[in-house]
Length: 108
Image (cartoon, rainbow, N blue to C red; front, top):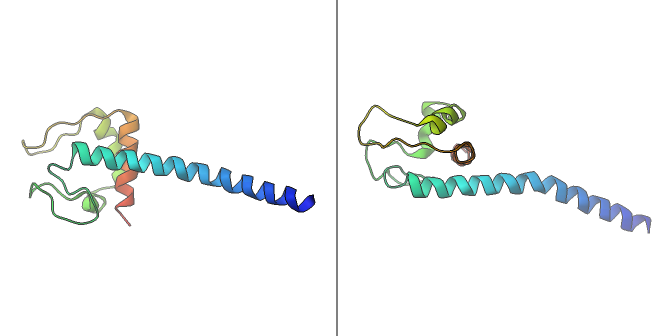
């Protein structure tokens, strides 16, 4: 009986440890989907490939330009750039957090 209790406790701990990772994975997937639907017509949003719009930087290089965490405010208040071809985007805080979580996966 004692061994069964230890196994049950270990299984419970593994489930609890995996819960934040699963939530993080879901956030990353939401960010990836958002990048594909809102950004991929101009930017390369994956680990490889060229951006469809030459002057649009690939998302995998954004962390080389500035800390992606710093994009949260710009994404929620309306991101604008110095060139007229990029439309203004405004995301809700959850969307901005998801997009940033996805961008961080591209840094590796």
